[in-house]
Length: 425
Image 1 (tube, rainbow, N blue to C red):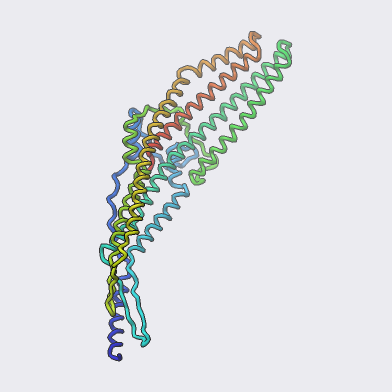
Image 2: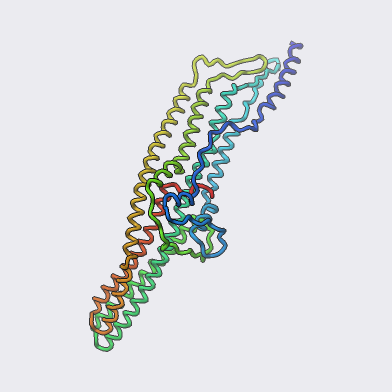
């Protein structure tokens, strides 16, 4: 016993030294999956899907108070707080990988005679390799962030259009208020001259009051839209920021086949699911190797015997998860195709509606109002007819503004359906 104890102590010391080296995680990362094919940048997508339209200009560093939509999108991609969540997820994925790369700790035992016994578990290389590869979740996080980036890009562009629409609507409301005040003055002069009944004065005052309330409502909507846009940008916009008004910019027709092909090839949702599928495949390999026994080097030498449990349950569970992701990918592909097809139809319909107003309808409504106002001053028409023409002109301008907004939003939603904006350009 006395001779055996020093030998065991020496052997245990040697194994502890080896264990100290073995428990340090390897600096080599597990073999990653083949990287996905590079996605097209936004400028190339615009050129292919909207032929004849100039590619979008690259956003410059926003330094002034007047910002373009591209600069707003850039600010949102830089300042939105949600990106901190993806950074945390990426750190957690790296921590899981670090844990998977760690070697198992040695076991030490003392018998009643205080004679130590040390066991150093050694995993089969294939088992360790598949476990480390399945733990590499960073590509999934990257693809999820890419999907959020595309969504945020579309949300920021839509919020810009909403702000511009609300501010224009407020300007139209103020212009309508001025017109109603002018009409009220004309009516007052005619009533005072005995050329119109007193009821016309009351009607004109009521229309002025309605116009004033509309101004207040539109101003509140504009303020709300600015708050929403500022929140998307991480509250980084200056209080007095202004937007370059691009609601009137020319937008070209869409090529539905190109839109569909690009969406199915590189939509961020599909790219994320491809990364998830690869991870699930690696998880199956991990479970298939999990039953392999570990060798216990020590005094005495030991080894597990997998006589009954070959991890069939773990393999079946991993395969079921893979099938679930495959089904989800099939569903998402159909939804992407649906969104692109409906997006093209909505976009083309909005363009046609906008073209109808730009074909002379607005000019005709404005000219009718001018003529009716002159005729009322000359006593050729009554106030009710003038107010009816005024409402028509006001509604025409409001509908035209709505058509501009609808066309821009339909364009943004079509780009969202294609998956534009996922790349960090």
